[in-house]
Length: 119
Image (cartoon, rainbow, N blue to C red; front, top):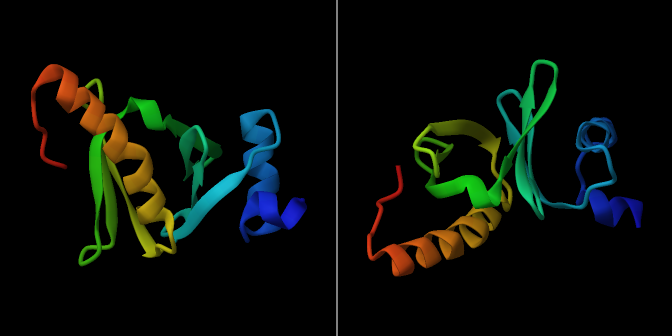
């Protein structure tokens, strides 16, 4: 179960991610970013910080996308704030991001009759 739970994420990153989450997590995809591993979990995008991890819930991301040319994953939160992360080795994280964010955006757009362009 261990290697499958972490999807190849380095053991130290997996251990600290579990500690920050307060439970054992299952990694769906991860990428090598400038500041460390950027991890896609079932419930959130996990970003490395100077003192641990920051979690951004998929439900909190309004729009976003991957720019392969600039190697940046960008998003805008429901509250209007935006953020981005540079990925040296994106792996399958952009695909997971698209799977998790687009359905939520479509539902919001369908119910609110608006179309938002990715940031």
